[in-house]
Image (cartoon, rainbow, N blue to C red; front, side, top):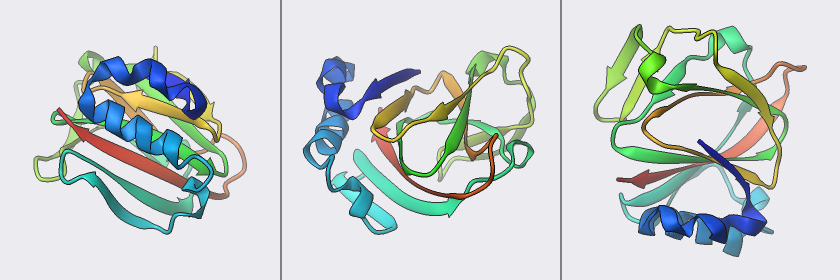
Length: 154
């Protein structure tokens, strides 16, 4: 897992062409991201794309850890308060469900050594396939959130 600022995103271009394209898009549109409408956007077809969503942050127990086999995730919270959980994927043993089409594995696990933190607008979080992550919840008062999730095919 990597946490960085959109302003300094060029430091992570070494992670590959797909990640570079995604981060260049974020940096090049930094002042416009908040104005994007909910929906799916393509940067490089199925190789690099992203979704913008707006939702009410859930309670922590309503969300599950997940991993992806075929994609790197890049999350950007644009508005509101959103919390994340992180744990190494090898700690996850109790699979809830698996969708090959959506490239999602969800887990019932609640690892004792998981890290939890709040995302701040202006930052991005990169989750590799070995990074189990839990998103879209709050430890604070529930409220509206707007975010981007970029998918980079590996």
